[in-house]
Length: 521
Image 1 (cartoon, rainbow, N blue to C red):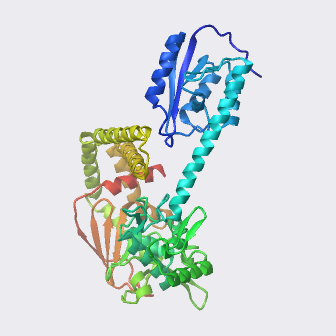
Image 2: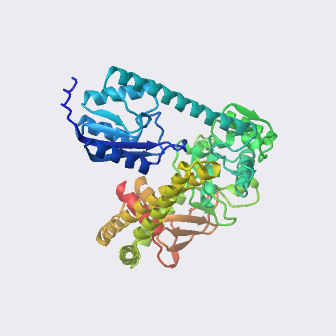
């Protein structure tokens, strides 16, 4: 049901709405718009009770944070008038703008424009609709100009948008090869051709500390478009424009087509062995002889029994290492038993809790929140300066790239601040002790318990023929002597009879994050 219109008097409660689009350098700045709206309100006796402003947001959409908040407040009858610089601040899409104005009218709210005098008469409303037509034409024409400019760049093989991993923007604005990331791309394709699974490639990249373009760890989805991107063969592609030889070649066409054939035949060569078994040491298990990751491998014997192993990738794919495959379940249980023994060793839990208390003191004394806030303020100031440059007509590829970089930096700083604040509110030392004691006294025969021990404590396991070296997340390292680690004979003599520990200073960064995730889980 439509709300009854309120009786309007001279003056009344009003709000200001200001907006500018990053693509339009001729628009008045937010400060200028607000200043002129205030002057208008003062001249006409309106009382400003709030200001809503959207920066660098197009008027072609209603998906504007401040605008949506204003419409919500209008529905609650918090004000009588909206004062804007021009009618195109409310919107450039005529259909949406008329719909919004109809809602505002239903709420008893009237729109007033500083630079445009449209009275609330038939002729005034007619003139307003004509102005909306002009605004929509201007918006659509500007979008066409931007698209035309991007397509013109495409014909010249200039960089438009996001670059694939392995490329960078050259000084001439065109694609250039980004070494050593391009070498990583070549290695991926070579390994797929050599029979590596995506799972093993993923584990290897993560183990080597190599990050994606976004600075994150590699996941299966990271490879989907990457391995099928023909831009790596030198093909420039943008919005229907396709130019052979338009960019530098990273992968030769023959190799690219061979990989496409492998992918189409296997769909996604993640390794069938993972379908029915969970490899708890994935990304953490390494060959003691050559240092390569040990990936998942499965096979079925003549009697139909399935066997699961951890296998050295160098041996499997390059045949330059003689490390024997290690039975999966036996290795995981031995590692879990070793962790349990470590937790029972006198002084270990006390040492962890003591270091934890020290870390809490350091967190409180040396919190980076203030430093991060200063960094955030500096980034925001830089963004403000870019916005001023945009308003002055200096919008180009350089300012856009810098703005995008600053926005990403701001996201990183805000995430770091969130983690810092969370770190100051983590568990008490007593809660950590109780948690460690529960893990120490768990049932080693339960698969979930083995999973918890490995997930929380193990940073890396190096497998030799006669021993294991376990690196723990909290900084310790243990070496386990065993009789033999070979196919079919591993652990034949039972659990290791002796454990030799090489102590290292406790380091808590990864351990604390695992503790928090374990508590949340």
